[in-house]
Length: 174
Image (cartoon, rainbow, N blue to C red; front, side, top):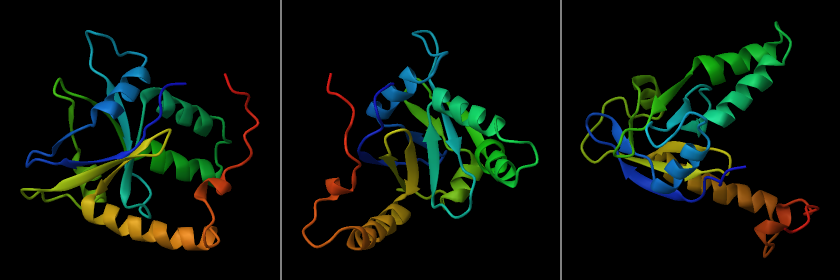
């Protein structure tokens, strides 16, 4: 298993829709791309489906292939398979990272996160979620931070440590 996507990084999006992928995320993407080598560029899979989300979900190529296999194993005609195929496969794209560590956000992805018309100073936030990372419009990221505080109030008793939500660790230490 490769390293995890961790932390969050505000990034400027230029008028040509180019944005730099944080260096730490690029290392994970390189490790998760079976075709990446010193003479090629790494790729990222961007899922922009499912309208209920305010962000783009980004995966390594290997993790995207795992999702494809899981969907493929579902019975043809299953409504869940159709929903997943549409929102994870049809409404996704794979993008090559340029030599400067940037990608160009495709128009459907920009529309999804409210960046269809780019202005000077547009800002996205790249947020790691262990197996993937999300790209948010800065305003939606800020709103989600407020939602996370409300969720914490529901999940945690006053003074309770958030790590108490984790299941027991039955994995032996190396």
